Length: 267
Image (cartoon, rainbow, N blue to C red):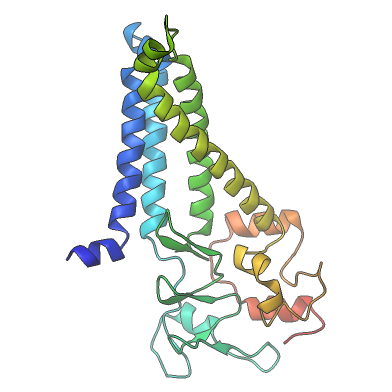
């Protein structure tokens, strides 16, 4: 039972939730802008901050628990998956040959990869996030981006609130006693702010060129990319179209057809 909880990411998710609400509680209990607003009876800003934190937690669990785009069936084995699943795996003579996964033995659609942690193949695999404890793939990548955006807003606001509560002290010892919890919260929020900002910037760039983290980092080892020129991306349709497709088009894409259309050297 204990092993299954650890394996399912239970500990990571609980840690994230507990840490989030502990920091939030510190910001509400100390003499910060939030506390001063409450004392004056101005509840709008405290309520908005609480709701934003709640939204970030809900988005975290949405990304963490949802199907990232697992490959469900194999047409060669005659699997009876959904029509969408079957259609996206149809191999045509005019498109690159589908690869067979060496671990789960399923045929992989183009841009899919087997995750060693999840032990499943994931469509348009980006990376496995240890803090989310789930893969980031075709179905939850845009939700992951939304989570990062909301989380960054929460963290920057929390950073401002924590700084507003730092009070002076007659000596260093008194100052540390008065501000110890706030300084701890400030450190946590500061570190996570930089990490989240970096992740958000990286993913915005990758989305704008229609590339995944896996493809960007392992281009030289990926069969359908290693023969392309250094600056060539067969899936890039321009910044506007890439962003539109990522944020507004919710469907399974047959990347074999996109690849065939945009490159003169299909593998």
